[in-house]
Length: 252
Ligand code: FES
Image 1: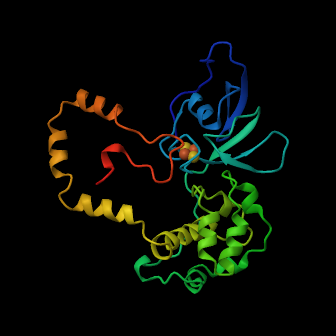
Image 2: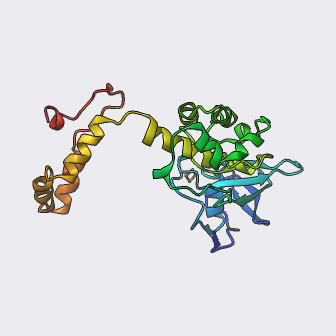
């Protein structure tokens, strides 16, 4: 994050301006902004600690204090709305330890996870990790599943994890929960669950020459026309059935 302007001037007409403190410095910003927008309104350019802006990528973990409140609060900067006198600090990266391993060599069994992350057994079930999770993932529950060796269960429960690292930031047992859950999901997806036949078929098609001719033809089309074709392409309906396939694909 780099500072580019003071942000002291009210740039939004008629906005109610409130004070926030960014890296210890006071700024007046419009009251309805998220933390991320308030930081940018104040004149900072976010180079790290900002990705999707939609609560999905986990890049924008933030810690803050409220006026007169001892507690440290946490949240995603792109999702949390500012309050008067917030003291804000961005965490572009949370330095939790990650086990070093060769994925190809790991057996998808409980013993592998326990050997790579023995700190699992330091969990004291305080549930601070679950309380701090901005995605409402039941962090303590997936840790309990892993302690008893249920990799598939842990993968299922942690599916919404966005790797922001806030769980690890509050853990008194010093567990890197989000790294452990990522290992569980990788083992589940890559070594425990059945292969998706249609994905395998598609990879073979792409690796072979099935689409070569079509790609060659697309490359000849002018950009504007290409954009039109893209915008008018058949799209999957929001509430599509499980077995939905585009017309162009049926019978292939
Ligand atoms: S920027 Fe991606 S979660 Fe906030």
